[in-house]
Image 1: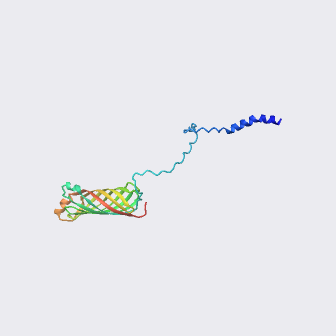
Image 2: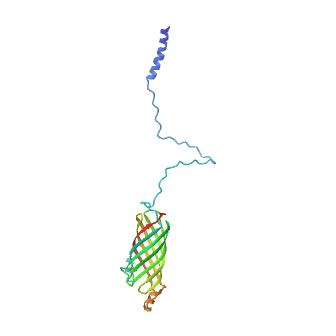
Amino acid sequence: MLRGSLFAFAPMFAASMAGAAEPQAAEPPRPSFEPVLYRPWVAGESLPTPPESADAAPARLVPGPEYARRPYQVSAGIALLPFECLASRRACGSTAQSVSFGWRTTPHFAWALAADRTQLTAGNRYYLALGARVFAYERGPLDPFLELNLGGEVATEAEGVALAGEIVFGLGLTLVEHLMLAPTLAFRHSEHRLGVCRSALATCDPWSHDRTYWIALGLGVGAVWGPPH
């Protein structure tokens, strides 16, 4: 009987051994594209919170170091009057020297005290004025500005003082942390009829009916200091 039992279990044992010897089938590869689960939005439901993205640096209009603006600036410059060669005033070859002090209350605004000496063929002109500057950028290597000042102009040939004003376009370029270079374009206008002449009548009469206006191309170098804005 024992032998019969062994013969009965032999086919079952052989089948199990054959199944173990066969390799298992590999799982099918996952598809490269999987559809996104979508459910229509129902009115009244709150919108899901968008996933947080990595903080990206803001786009910059002008590349370069992020120089901060400082409140105090002093500068000196020279200028030429090339367009006067085309005028009838015979001021060709005239030059000007200038100094200025600026107090920058905000990154976009500053008060300015300006003084310069212009050498004309008729005589020297001295100018002292108080003005305001408006700046385009609050930080960066470029610092373009527009300045409007108003003051008085002294003419040595007539010993006269006249009301004068000036508009200045400048492009400041920060070379290092506390040093700037600025090409400028200035337009000057003075009204001698709104002035006082202390010379002889023969000199004051034509001077009082005259006016001064010119365009100057200049280059200034300045130093800035103080706590950054």
